[in-house]
Length: 339
Length: 255
Image: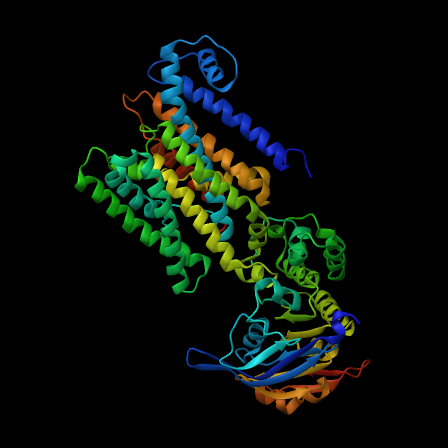
């Protein structure tokens, strides 16, 4: 194996990049905190040592910016991985959770979570409700696609249809209900990290661990699926079960991320494509690589959105969509995506 | 006794109806290890449907398929993979893995049980793709991809091999080599069922032939019995002549 292509080296390099991006993220904003002060705040909380920190820096870095960075990190990691596994299992180079309708399905639950569950647990309820709703959406997409033959393209077609319909429904509902507890319509199209708390980060972390922990053991099956669904079954992979598990995990993880950060587009596409170009086709490499790339992408997009200097905070998903859309056009123009 | 010694494929009055079209009607055939049967016939005669049904991909409307007593459509994918391998007519071309890895996918059910590397190498050598081992599959030519896919099927090491048009897109030399490998697999005790449009290659390498037309068996028997000029002219709707090969004596079909 070539150096730089083992799972361990991917994890080490990925962690370094993510830690660096997180430190940048907690250091920028309307109140500037120096990198060294950020370090001291993080050290005082994460290391068993006494560090002198100013209460203001501590409040900004640890209570406001850190949960925001963690939610961005986990959202990016989950969405990056879901892009990779959907691209692999549906044999479509640009598949992601949004394309198969799961982001919109999750948004329905997340909206209900904000509206009906806010009193009992605040925004954390939206994370749980989004996860459940994403899971149910995955089952529905699988059932509908199965009704019409079960070929990979059916999942995409069913997903696009259901996704656009549900997305419009959620947007309408968020305007019509007009409740301060429900994020405005931007959140349901371009995401938002403004409401991130430690509680939200914790709930999302649980969903992310379930998703990534469930997907990693499927790496070899996903490799064999590159042959196509029928040949993979001929050599012994239970394709229907694998696909059901993949969709369920993708629904769960995507759903939680939508509850925490709204609909952040194109992260799956970018995470999956960039990772496979960097580390090759083996899923045991691409899965962790796409988690790190997705994480850096979303944290980075949030930083850019906050320092863009447009006089307002640009929603994180707007940045990822602009960059991701440009990347997709570039991929197609350079003939990097087989059509 | 090796596994192949007891291999037996029993197909009993198999019928498949797709929509309201009878694609396969009352097809019966029993094969034992060592037999290589070539299924021939015009386009749409039911050859691929027959193979898909034997593989367990299609559930027959009537009749039964048993591979060593097992119904391939009723067992899980991993079990089916240990009793039959299957070369479909087409393959996915955009695979990022290298050739050796793709061939190794054939040994998926042996993952973690035995080291399949030797089987991968042998399979690649036999169809002449060993020198492509490190090349990405998607960068190969159509014929090279076809041979790699055949190597993957060999690597699966199942007692029944189902080959749908194995020589499709192969040049003369490689087509002959692939048919020799298939015959060789049969002589080692496997059952090989292959469809083919190349009547001469089929007649030269197969131990028996089945001629199909509109889902029915028109004739089955040795190549000399099936490669009958009048019969083929009738079924293929074009006038053909059958001559003995000048050196081997096997029947040669010419137009």
